[in-house]
Length: 160
Image (cartoon, rainbow, N blue to C red; front, side, top):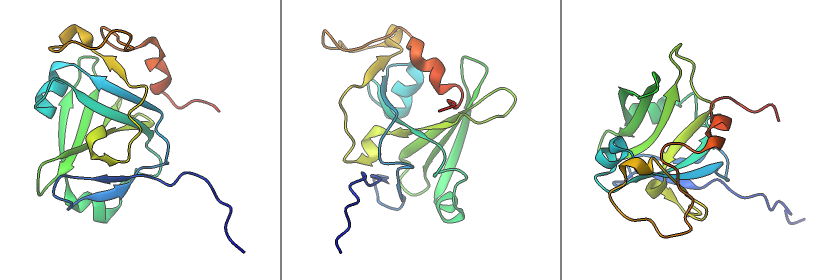
């Protein structure tokens, strides 16, 4: 009997050189942000960085095999949090980052760099930290000077 499972399959996250590859935690992202902050400009070497937001469960805790292929850069944020940024040890591609509260509690989400997600649906991305933007964004695009009011939903796991 043929399977009738039509649930979306996870997408593949892959670095530039292919040394690091893993599936997205679930198939569907929660949100997509095009961040224009100066940190994302520096990290991406471009006008902005794109992050697909996924639940961290399924990726964290990192497997030993994946962790051995990754380097981690940690930096403070402007909101007294810490951001841990993982990258390929071979090619240096940033793959994902995760925020940690001042008490060390990790956020329940992970931000996976959009350009590393094969087959990512780019529709509906929100432009954030527009106060630092260096390029014009088309009229009608959803944009915020800093974070959208709905960002609060990413601070803690919802009860649903």
